[in-house]
Image (tube, rainbow, N blue to C red):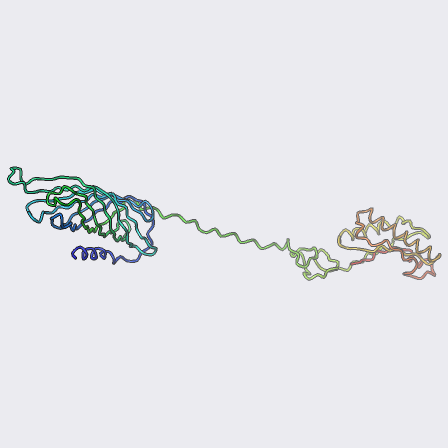
Length: 362
């Protein structure tokens, strides 16, 4: 009953630990030390007593720590309190820590092996060397559990563990080959060296915001004029659009392009007029025109039809030869004498009727 009460009391010793940040893996070496209370196996016939331990250890993973510890207990024999009994030991112990996010305290398991040395005085009367002394080294094994609380550089440990001591040469308990002691310990660990710097977390990389498209690259109404320069942003398909994006009315006047009577040959004075027409077509590269030829009424209808076609062909070939793409030209079309501009009853009227025209198609 005494051992059970001792176990419960020490396991609750650090239950007051406050909630703190989650334990991080700190691999610094630490020194440890504290007091112990040894509840001796009753077969030893020794008194229970206090002792101490010191050690050196470190965490080797987020959950495992390894410690090398030295322990000492000094007590007396129950049958002869003038006879000393002491024990020294060294052990290597592994502790598995049940660390939980959001708490600065946690339980752990302890397990290890070591060597225990017992120094025992005994009554050797009537020998003049009484009391006698027995010294022996024994294999030992530890198994227990504990609680640990993290306070930064200093941690607090409270634990209870059983130690099996394979001592088969005890004088006071000569019939026993092993003993099982219960040890309660309360101590601290102190980390050595500076605290590890917190890992530098790179700030999240925010992808650059795509630049808004420039108005110079946009043409919302598809009229061939970018939004920056388009003063009429709602152009209708099929319109002829000027450089400002607005619809323009194109009239290509070929007045002055005339032909001699009964001829499809251009007169020399027609070149200047045709050069203007070519410039207009170059300025508006989407413009399409019909090349149409006309005659006066002198001659038969059939003859005038063929003559108007030849005159239209002459102008058509002239435009193509001067860089106007053929796919922009409709025709050539001859209308003969069917579309006079003036009367055919006068020489001046007939001269006006002998003409070609560029009729805008879009």
